[in-house]
Length: 199
Image 1 (tube, rainbow, N blue to C red):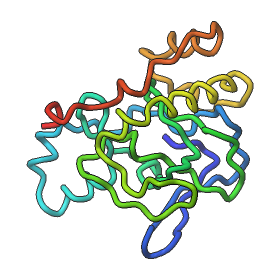
Image 2: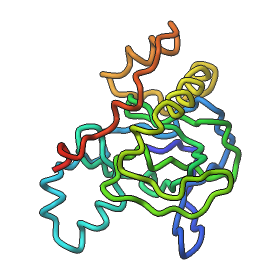
Image 3: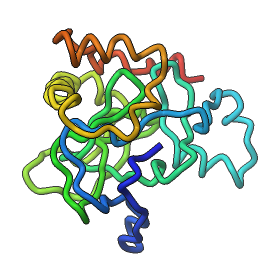
Image 4: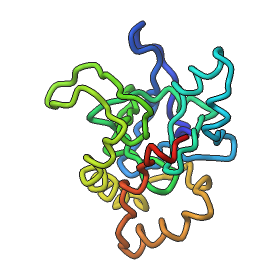
């Protein structure tokens, strides 16, 4: 589920829709949490889908570390890519605000964290040499994403967390240890799904 202070907005014909903040969302806030309404789809099921549904499932879902497709039930599936993403993935089935996000700003992900099946050509962004998201970007860029996530977690207990009740039970102890005892985060490299597991 996306943070409640967000809305879907049409951007243009090339990009389509995006998710935008309607209020200030401070760094360290949970901006998305997986919940029981999100669909977890086996690759074999997706592979057998009819030609009308399969492209949309592949377009609007991402892969977890086990190769399963995660199809979000709400506007989360419309979060766009940026190499300077305002949100950062974690190993705990949630994303955090990577920095302060102001009203009217778009919430974005670096699609490199999403285990894409195919390379993704991106619109140009100033200040980066990256122009494509590759399926194995997690293996290249996880150290910088780990740093961003660790810095966001430092603010976790200082900000309002309207999605905190959606933290999955299996992650609650780890998040308490990280935010209250200074335990190191589990690295995002563990989100990487080996292509052999994806089938």
